[in-house]
Image (cartoon, rainbow, N blue to C red; front, side, top):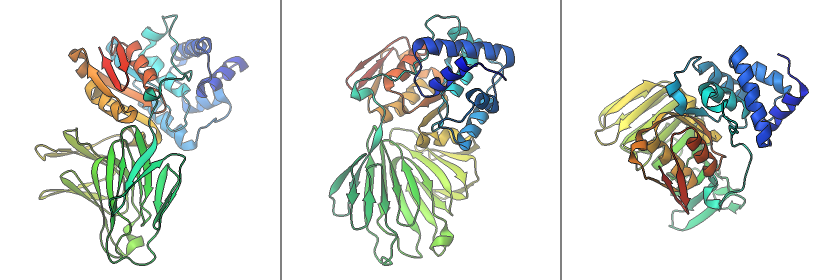
Length: 393
């Protein structure tokens, strides 16, 4: 594929969120022509356009390519409620437009005001995305605020405000002492436990964990509520000691693995998603084993578990700065947004609660940008923001 210097320059600016509205229109027109003539480009073609990989890793490129390949080549006109603003980690926003352009060709390309909101603007603080922040509660009940940009050093741990790392236990602790890490709405945080296990914590999450584990005994933590991604240090490094996670009405037994647990207080289901390794989920007298790319959904009212095969990345993309929504109702989607932006949503028009949303959003976008996009694609007619309350209609 051959592309002139002008469009190449604009595409690079588009990736960096530096396009003017006029330049965005040029990108939209370019993608329209490209899609009409050749279909969606491959990642290799995108990279050829850019002539380099700005802010893009090989892993990013693979994920983008998988997204493009998974995109249906034909969509009925009723699929206008799908839109994709894709930026896996630091991947190119351009690919998001490539995917989006197919679904909304009729809506986007026939309108003069079809610019996609990619120019960074200043908004009230309440509309900004979440940041690294948490509250650490020590065994004696004292609390320490952990905020991005601040540092902390204790006898057992150190923090830079974006995460906290517990030192390996060199003294072979004989008694377990627990700490709590609580992430509020509008926050996220990372913790490395004393055994080397890494845990990413999503908004509105609380984790109970030991300052140090007892050598040779089962390593146990509790996800009190919320969502967490675990990369567990293998049992072979700890004299065969398994890792166990307690959460709402279930117990996950682990043998060195990576998995995600989502168990929010206001959700009727909890979800355990296995990325790699092995886990066994115990629910009452039931024990179910998961293999990679499987998810266990537990109805917390009936205690009925269901295991199914899923696309894992859509479940764990949150920890890399991406919200991936697959056939979710608007009512359930705004639960996720409310946790990240620390706002409450009110439906002025109850009929739109069950509108189905299917797409990807960047967590770095302001809430105002996201709501404008949803409004543009007629999922909502209008919205109003008052302090930390959003009214949808």
